Image (cartoon, rainbow, N blue to C red):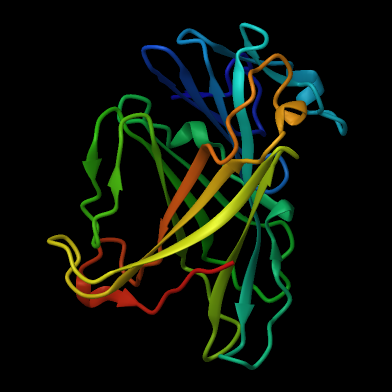
Length: 271
């Protein structure tokens, strides 16, 4: 885990997570340039390195500012963007004006970075807040990378594998604009033309970590037939139907920073 690789300036957050395997490398690049987002990159080289051209990255036209070495080793590239925070007045009662996350001001993540624990966070507030809802509040994305297989301590115990990342979203101290407000976080996934996203729900009746019925969502990127022309430049094509990446989401929310089952809140996910 590294912060702003190759850059000593401030005012920007780029968090790079690198997971090295025997024959390949995974790169996750989190950033708050515009709306918070994560770029997912897979390389067929076990020694690939992320390179950034910072003046170009910070310019209005940053295309080409980021690449992997060695050239032609990229086997997959995709992105997940957190675009807006919606606040519903009450179920079925319409919405307040949404919070555009591209218009947030983000704290310096280096101040809370824990490289040895592989933990980082992006914490921000709106640059304009006429209602004062964020006067004592913030929106926080907590990022945790994993060296080995395990399971989250927070119920219902989401599993992880080595080389993966977990994300927790926290609304801290936000004052609702309505008496029955519900909050919705909008997430957009971007793929090259040769890949397709599929949202797959699954309901589990019971397990030792989460007794009861719960839902897990998998946002899976798959290769399409005859998609070789849209693969990253210099890479080999994938067989049709191959899984390229996935985002596993278990819809659960708590009203406490040290959650117990009795702190659970109603929460859902869909797309």
